Length: 331
Image (cartoon, rainbow, N blue to C red; front, top):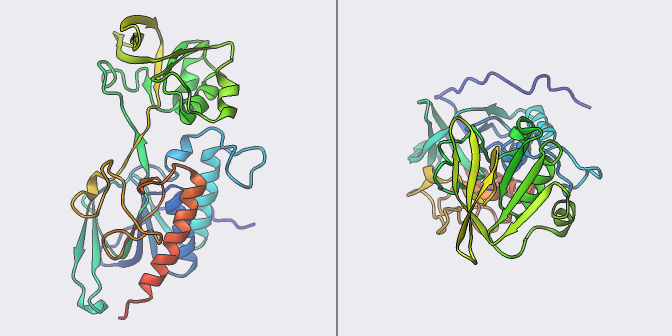
């Protein structure tokens, strides 16, 4: 066993330093690449707009991640990733959103470009290569009341907010894997869950359906869509529309948890990299993007299932490709 000390560190970003690898996004893909590249001896800086760990840190129980027969808490898993990256010397900077990435000429490196990463706080970071592993964020419904009641009853994370609603009646929008997994967690606390499914069938894995759909605390409403969230200081009810009958019902509710998909965190890359119609980064099999020296891994990639194990594989592939790329530098 090794001891890396506290999982927080004071990292002073030196603007004169040219890092070998700048990794944007501290989730499974980003940490995996950091473990590989820092172990290889490359000067690696990992930066995230929030706390290290990414979206997976909000997952209460992961049962399909290899190596944990009884499942593993997402936050605990990511602490292990972080400790391993720190062990090999990776530097980690949290709560530092990236605003832009620019290319800069570098005659000292055989004509290879240097990338200049600028953050919202005004910091400038330079690197020979960049990995984009920014993942995705929950999509919003865009219905009346959603923005107004965000963090006052509207949530996108049961693990974060579920215990607040102990003994309460809540609505969950979305019956995919995430929606049912999060509902399973909510059932430990809430009085009841009304599940709203936009379609006639639930597309979640069978194991999640078996655990949730027939639970005595759960009511399933198929072919319904949420059209408004109502209340004053807190949520009191929601309006839902029966898509078949075109009728509108009002359902009492203390909270609404929304799981209708995710959007890639790539807005800051528009005009720099090739993206698909949904904003995901287009890469080849080596995780290389349309710009030489910039790589992408994990959920942010086009045509990539949102799975932690796949993100880890992407991160390893990206690290190998980055090694190959850095070996072409001569200075």
